[in-house]
Image (cartoon, rainbow, N blue to C red; front, top):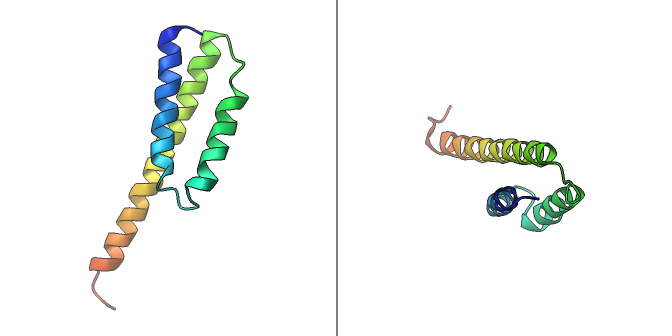
Length: 84
């Protein structure tokens, strides 16, 4: 693996670990599954395959962020909405 791709993989892994701290099922649930997902792709050597894996990890990162924004929106809506 080339050096820039290695740094990209490490960066996205760290970002996903950071996002996993607030995962609804807990960090202890999230971290082993993230590690397993990255370990399953550890044997990739083709740059195109590695880039595809990075893109899928970025997609998962966006999905997790959307989940957090939705959770925050629902909490604020419940807190500040008028009682019915």
